Image (cartoon, rainbow, N blue to C red; front, side):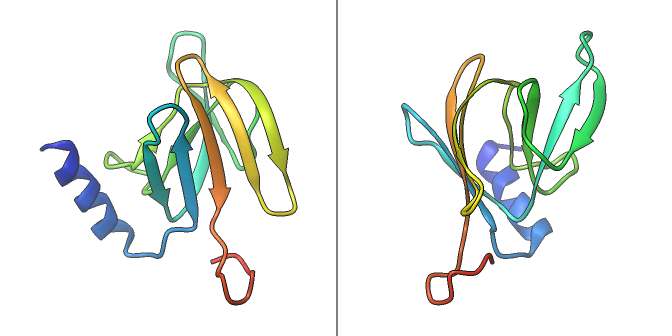
Amino acid sequence: MSQIQLEALAELITQGKPNWKLVRSGDGLTKHSVDILWIEFNEDGTFKSKHEDFAIGRSLLMSPFNDFFTWQTTPITKIIAEATDSFYVKFETANSEYVLYKIYEEATGTPI
């Protein structure tokens, strides 16, 4: 399957309204996700644990949480900025810089 087909399939699987937006600095690559999960790996690259919060050493995984996930970053190496009141985090990984936003409804200001 091509990347475009996988993204279309992922959207069909989630059948939900995206709640998260990830933008990669530099090229502006943008990914949307209904949910997110932070994962940690052992030194040998095998899965170690999953988390609800970001931290250095954790990778972002965007839903759906199966073989057709939307996007996965490499582990965070530096947290550049964060705002907990509106959920915004800017972070670096070994090979990229990202900004993750929680999407809010414009009319009400509440999370989607």
